[in-house]
Amino acid sequence: MPVCVYFKRLLPRFVYRIIRSGALLMLLTIDIGNTVVTIGVFDGSQLVTTLRVATDTRKLADEYGATLSNLLNLKGTDPKLIDSACLCSVVPPLTITFEHVCRDFFNVEPLIVSAGVRTGLSILYDNPRDIGADRIADAVAALNIYNPPIIIVDLGTASVFDAISEQGEYLGGAIAPGINLAADSLFFNTSQLRRVELAAPNTAIGRNTITALQSGLVLGHADLVSGLVNRFKLELGQEAKVIGTGGLVNVIASEAPIFDTINQNLTLLGLNLIFHLNQRTRTSEGDHERTANR
Image 1 (cartoon, helix red, strand yellow):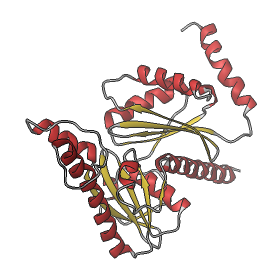
Image 2: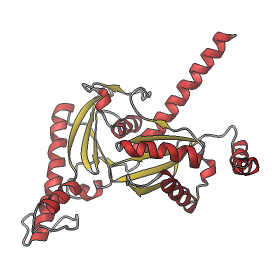
Image 3: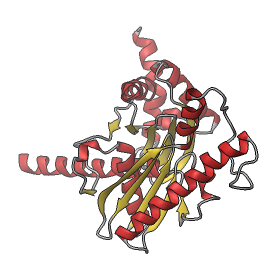
Image 4: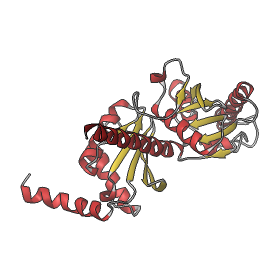
């Protein structure tokens, strides 16, 4: 690349960073799920922009980068103002893709939430490395916002339940197939059943194939969620606060009135907290090192 073009590309970001010197970081958070990639931009502790794109392992970094840059501009957030990034992923091939997106399109090195990253969370799981990074981010955010004990219900591709004790310890949880996964299984593995809208029927007894499928999928899943939450409460205590999140939580919430609150940005909020915790740790370690070298 010619030197003049290189400096032309760097100058706007350089100018923006001078303007923002002393201001809070503008952080790009990325939650890579099995179905949807959820993006959030934070200015300090404030979530200023959210957007969602489909998960597609066939897409290249350039495709995702161009899409995110354009969408951020359309939402009124200048990509040049982003000076840090934090991501969690349950889709390993896309982890690498979004690392390249952060470096090539936003000129930042992302913090990837994985084993070894500080979270401030006490984990009592048999093997902490087995826990999905999104579940950790959810737990960190929930503990920061709500008083334990807490039950987190994340309804997406899978229906994931997480339990946090009264002492703020991450205990573990349960994982069940999500509604869409169950619907796809019926559609692909049977000859006469079809796709249906994921909406609750008026009655549990379906009078045709469509309402019978809706009853089994939506009402059946609502009872699965209610049943597991009630079992968790028997172990955690009836005062446990139930937090709903995930793309399908609103489908279930109307049929299973078990949620104390719904927070669709829980994972993004957790990523923001984890990033700043690690930033403070690095700053503290740097100060100690400079003091020791004097």
